[in-house]
Length: 301
Image 1 (cartoon, rainbow, N blue to C red):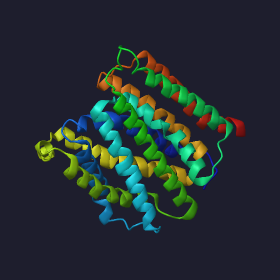
Image 2: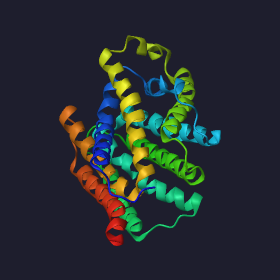
Image 3: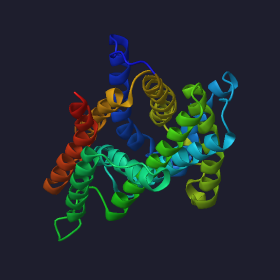
């Protein structure tokens, strides 16, 4: 891994990922107009796989890691997130709550990998807990919580936890296989997600909507293509390449821009409204992320 600073090309790649992933949540909302959550999962990963799976060899790692990553990151994270967006979660808030994966990753890292939490991480965990409490207070009383529901809130946190589990898998892969191909890993793990999503759609989607994807609008198919090619292959490909060539503490802070873009696009494009308690929760969660990602960097300097 190189220790030099990010080049202009690296900076452009990082900012591209921030925009791709921030807009991602609004695009999901558009796609869910014509697809059920499980249909969207199937279509997303078919697009992510084709045609690259025909051109790229499987990564030279144990297949169990490809399967685990595909199930946690594909079916787990995005399957649950699509459900959350369908039953009661705004794109703007989802972009913020998904970033709690940082803290879930720390928890799972402690339990599974015996990793110790640094002081900035401990402070961030406290701030994040307070932020989640603010979000929960939306559901107390009669004022409501905008366009969100308690179930949507819980599902979004579960999706973030699945993202964290995929981070643990990716970390083990990086520790065990120094020269693996990140792009091949993303493509072939995406293939793993296709059949489970298709099976879930067949098992749980009502018969009345089972074939609605056939009549989906062109704009919805364009949204699926964006999710599969831009957000998944291009986004994860650029991000993993940056992490492979630079220390994580130089790359990770850029992810703070994802909820900013997500909030802005959700409010501007979809007209989503944020309640006062949600703004308080957003401030605390983003503050927690800044504490974790920037705290260690400041200390080292």
